[in-house]
Image 1 (tube, rainbow over the protein chains, first blue to last red):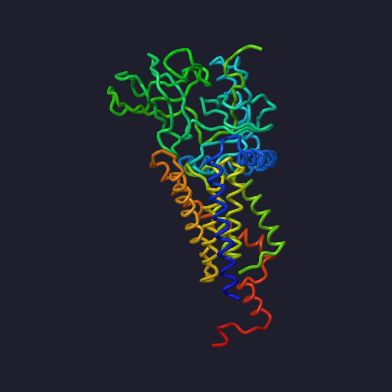
Image 2: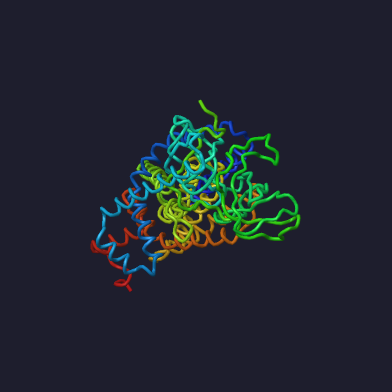
Length: 289
Length: 189
């Protein structure tokens, strides 16, 4: 009886390990239009409405936790925080949420106006899910193909560029952030507009990007601003999916400055750990209809 | 070994669905000290400790599959690592039957560590050519601490949810024996 139980347990374990390895191998070997990717997209389509509903339903809980987190971190303002807690309570939480949403949306509109992004038909969406691991810097938003969102379109928040759309469903889309290890953005830095490619400095570090492929002996300084170039090379012929002039970040330090191997590190303007509303530029080429 | 009855399977399936949705829609969006909690290894560890290696391993495989599908990650990676976590937790229960209050805390920490390291190793094996940064290690350690703190409440919730479908929980059986006139080991000695 005991032997039978052990044999059964080992058989199931072996079967599940084999299933995992087969899935892994098949998934890695097929193209993005393959059967397993199709199954994954189908599952996502089913889960999206549930995730969106859950995201909305759990918003007060998130706000409550966020409120506690803010209070804990504001050690110096402990007395004020206590007084605030007593006076506001539940209604204040709701009011704070509405005000914060309003501010973020206003900031988004301001950024659109300041950068002339209205011609790119920005579509505002809410973040409904986020990857829990540091290996996938992705978010899910509640705008999809039915809202005009397409694969490859750039995504911004009220501060700066945050990434691009990498997967689209009917009512939602997956956005890969600029801190994902697969992300590369052509950019201009400093007043002279020096060309380079911005990518993450390392996995799991959302506050450090690196600018590479800078022309040899180009002079850049800490504090110089970096924005999207709008083309994928130094020439103007190949347009990038990212329109020109969208802020990315600010140079923080330069290693081996002035040499051929200089490494320019920058801090993104956008706080990628706290994303709530984003905008997809649904007409990145800026054409008029 | 706990038999996988239809009632238990239904409860485990519901737990997978609710767990993954709560993780992606709420817990992942709550940064604590720059990182966030990861419920998947805690849920799998809890099921392993409560139901044994077979149910733990299968549950880990299921959770991994749904997580990879829901987040469009490489299929099979989470399944493989969580399968090991669930099986390991189940074997601890079968081989040692630990009864200490803080066992889920220790096993939860170990499960999170195994999951984080295993997940990272799988990615390096699959060819992610990003360097390991201090931020990555710091985030992994922060998640480990948060998950350790969450291990007991998560275990308690999972236990409460699965209890009606667990026929032979040894602790319940012993407790029932004492309160219904049975001799406790102390009175026998």
